[in-house]
Length: 314
Image (cartoon, rainbow, N blue to C red; front, side):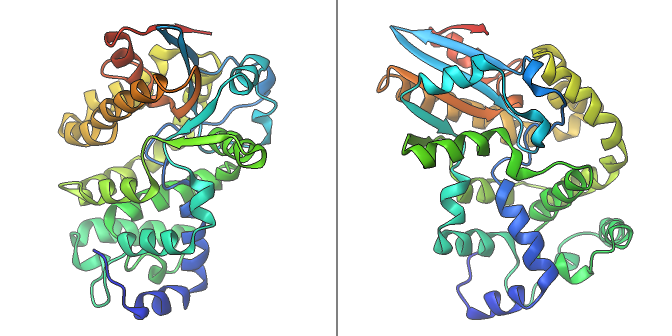
């Protein structure tokens, strides 16, 4: 996967469209495979904010929405007060730090593309590649922009483009909102994962072509999905969020169980363990993770409760 040849930089940056798509993808690679939603009149939205307590330590858990717009703000007072009362901000990955780290960006890029001489079309079936070409033609995006992307990266890139086509902006995401404040005020920022680690995890999928195909086939459902998940998030309805993000997908496609294990359940276990450890080192933490990680069975919330935390929604 890694290749330090200068030709990577030359070939990629020689394509203006690819450069633009890549820069947009960097903003949200850490979160695109998590909950994404759209809402209006955010000041009256409940959102998903939980409070977990154990042995005198408090952990606020905010279900993040990674693509949003200005209508999300201002967030309700309870959310902002919880953040301001905390000792540190905890996120999946500090995407702002990555954006100012050229060496890390190059590492991420190298993990995201095939080495020179290899192309996406040579690593997936002609059927799926033809589906991708149809989408590229519809969006008037040159084939060269995707020609060397690995399947999982192509999957999240086209998802990002479709979300942005519906007016959503990764720069308005909830996690980015708090990261901006933390960087500006020199608040301690702790990572549960890393951008590079998440890219490597995506590339470890056993059958990435299957998930690229799934994404292409489900793009037509996005217009219906967005208002449903919007309503669920605005009302803070954990059950509906779980249905939309996890249960319905698994019920319809049980063959995707390994994907959910990798993208949700394993990560939930790892993140819950790290939250437990960090909580013992701080009086109060403000944790921002994708809302899909906080709901239902095998969630971070359930795992913290099993570890002795008392959790309530606020």
